[in-house]
Length: 532
Image (cartoon, rainbow, N blue to C red; front, side, top):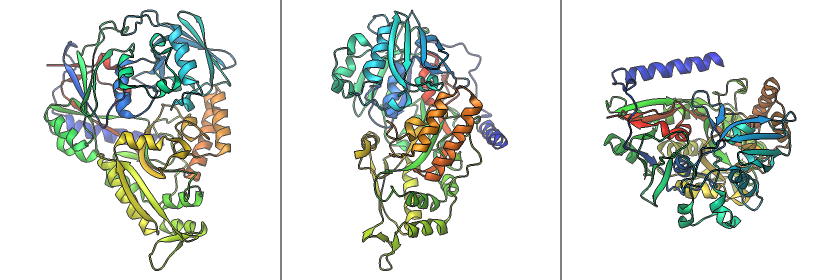
């Protein structure tokens, strides 16, 4: 596995050298203050950390801080609002020492009260269906020790918690939100959202649905005054429109679809980054609904897709095949022996036959008890890769006797339906996950967990994941996580497609950008600056 990853990295480096060899560099310039960074959103941003969605987090990450963030050199957890922390010998008590020089955007001091409020009233509050609760469901309560010290008491030992705390868990202001009801915390009005302040390097200044969001520099940021004056987020759902605005200089950054690379790689005003990201693209099934509650059907639909050919056709091969939800970048825990379900029309048809889905010779559509094998496959508008994936999957599944209809909707609308719990009406969908840089995937594949949008449940997998959380020994964790990868791959709760490389297109004047995926760079926007 290591040699394969090494070759992949060498190939990426050579490609970038070829593409960027003649590009001028600003590496020796001193950072300068001023300017506005312009970034795209594929849909409106609510700027509310209690709900998810990429457009939302792209904005709120500029305005809020977490207890812990990831180091931009190796993605290991480091302090953010917490200067440091200790773990009790039994693994059930975490003690955080908070920074003392932090203020909210309205000038009020940040204290332990804010952490205790966020943990007890939002993260662990059963009346607030916090979408990332599965990542931190080991937390029982937060306790204030003094103004700058907080203890987290856990239900069970967990040695993966620091990685979970670094993933999309901003601390919110107790002095503003203390009188909000659970319903208001779940779904505040736009006016309520605008009243909320953060501690981050930028302050929310403007939020215009369908148009843009804008944040402005926080001169009192604890880590030092940011270089940029402001960040403008433009709502542009279509990636081709984003590309046109990037080329026209109206955007400073966009994540590229691989097919767009040739249009910009020789542009002297644009720099291309190849970023590592712990992610994967998938076709998800609602595992509690017919026909997907039958494991044989899920396995058959996976066998029916030539995933390697799909990856070549959709993203030009710029990724690594996904066989389970653990990223190959997490080399220490990755199980390279799990090859996934190979492309085999013969196996797909045999499994469907075994599951009782027989071909009707008049229609060539499979039926079971008189019901046709009907699949409604949904994805979001404006992303060519996911749209093309839907068409390719439709063709593969039709070849084994499924009647497949493709439906598309705006990203936020689809995400809300996918995350509607077991009552979700989305039976099959194409999306992607970016996960914490750790193989603890309890929140995504644990029974009844918050981001388990596939409604997959295997009690044995749950027990193994829980055991992995409890052990501090990494070798023991490796053995457990490798078992998890084997079981989830065999259960086929989703069609694991690929781990795409993140192609980033940046205006050549943008400096200080991070080396990992843009979601991690958004944690350190105070370091980004624009040269002349």
